[in-house]
Image 1 (cartoon, rainbow, N blue to C red):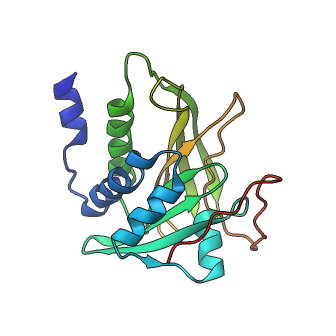
Image 2: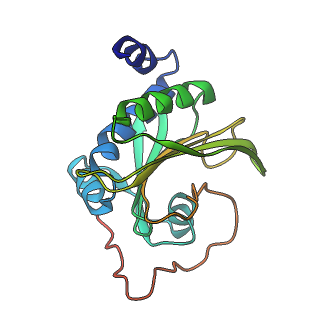
Length: 205
């Protein structure tokens, strides 16, 4: 098993896919369910906050307040985003090889799998969008003594031209309802709609 995990986690020959997985490991995995901790991490890393409302809408979505940051690396252009409801952390790559992103995601799922925390494959589908076909996978993990219930999701696009070609997300989940992977799609911005009585997520500069 250890050898299989090591093989799955080794670097690919696509630097952008490798960096997307690395960014997710650094920013999202240690902070599942805590978008405020991700915001603090982004501030510590001196990431550039996204100020354009349409760009924030694209990265965060239309259902929740949140924040986003641009991440520049020699391998390409990336973004980090958090949503308040459900508490989520997402990394995006403008360009990335789909097979390598999915291989990196599979390695993360395998690492998070424990004897008392077996994931359930909740979604594996291909949808058509204005940017081509998007393959999405949702793996849902049950709550344990040290970790609340959460889901890991990945989405890859088959061609460039949209807001991303690779996306990996960690999302806090509650209850038996289906997990919405919240894949960015073109469309008009809408005002955030947090649950009644829920405090807004303060943006970090």
